[in-house]
Length: 234
Picture (cartoon, rainbow, N blue to C red):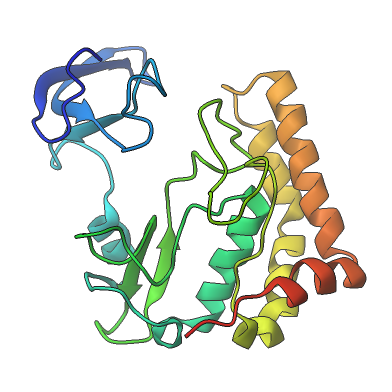
């Protein structure tokens, strides 16, 4: 926390107690990460990038792709029409569910591959690409104390939801929303089973999820919050 290295890794170890009760220690490299949160005036404890040896642990995006019979795609910025529409809609509704606007399915950070907090995959190495979302600490469902609303949208709180789906996919919306309604009990079950969440946090998350399910259960709400809020971009 004193040096907050941006690129140079420091040597370290990671110790934990396994399910069988035995203590395990792994070697790793680590450095601070992020732009906004790495600044000392914003976070007294900056987020860390833990770089484990791949042979020891941790499933990365290539492993996820291989497990699903796909390939990772490294490309520059793209247009919406090269994305799988069903998965694109699914990701956009999921981001709405968790109250996350800190992502882009078509553009990456400067000097980085597309896309922002989204990995692209393909079963054929060609289009259509399948977007896979990650990095949710600025989401309303997390409500991290350091999280700030995306200035692009002029929201007062990270808990404010905004649908960023494509208007061209509105015809797919009923089916996408039904997928979430079908998994409603399972989603609540995930929250109930999180042992590290306090009872207070569980109640808070459950209320936040409840607002989402109430919204997608009412046709007028769907029209106002999804259909009329869609984006019409290339």
